[in-house]
Image 1: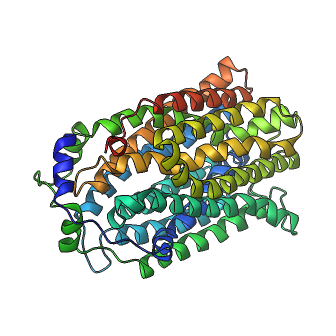
Image 2: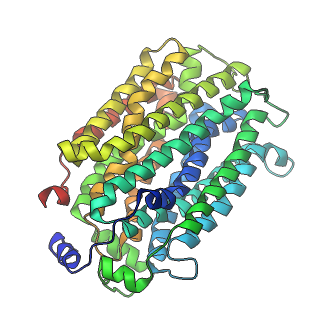
Image 3: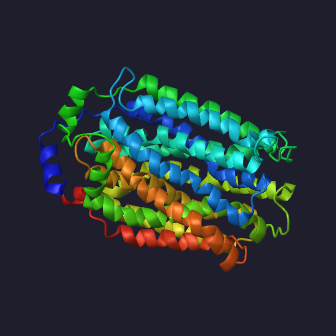
Length: 453
């Protein structure tokens, strides 16, 4: 559907009523729990898999399962959440199912070593990563559609910014938790199953926070029933339904989405490298570890430093997210995103020059600016381009541009580190910084319908 027909539909709709800040907050608080879980996954999965025997060059292949699952799950969840309405609502049933499955996976992952009599711990761990990410996607995808469902265009930037603030809050807590527990008496020595107690207890706490925050959103957020939804969004064009409709919608995706796809490719290729390789990059480049170091106390210390540094970028993102609407109004949304991505690229490249691990937090400031913008601005720009009744499916399709670069990185990233970088993961981080800068350049050329209006 072209831009003219989208505008025609929007012109026939009634503007949604403005929500109070407290309503937007409660609507988005589930994202705090989702990102709490993501932070634990991003900061600790590599070291858990290394503890189970994975080589550093194998890590991307284990991580690749997550975006592969996301690529399949998110469009399907988006499609069916657009079509769903029951006693819980349109998006809420998916929140609840995702929360239950995610909490189970968070508990199971660090305990994979207890099942070695049946299957090697490494493969159980990799399977739990797959289940965890599928569950996160089931819970997460409808959240972005919910914000677009309930907020007027006037409040969309504020809504996504509050969502990003809560994402940052959850991620800060999740990232800092393993080191916090270690400094408060919980052992960080690897147990008989290869995983330290501070990591296990962090994942248990994460499971509780995840499901509790989702339940808050479910109990305290209203969704518009179908007759009200049509009043505010217009009547969706019927194309026969079924999963085949996903492919039709994919072919007819708006121009803005296609252009943002390139920006997302560079951004998420960089983020995937950061999540997968930073712990080993810090261990070898800053701590100067070598040989079989993956179960050493020094490696766990490096992992704790990385997890805490990730907490810094999420803390920065949490507060910077609140400034994004102001910046977007001052200089426009594309330039706001470009400046933020440029800061992230500089931050990643600066890790190469660090000698003291305590300096990692300063590199993460730039990453935090980029992360806040990545979580908000592409969706703000995109939301004005999506036709009525297609918010869920197009948010799911947009996920292709997040998962595809991670899948490509998963196939080639480990090989590059092993054969081109001679096992030195730090160069993967430098390449990530370069890609983030490429994303900053790309977004300048994106068509933003709101700017035209």
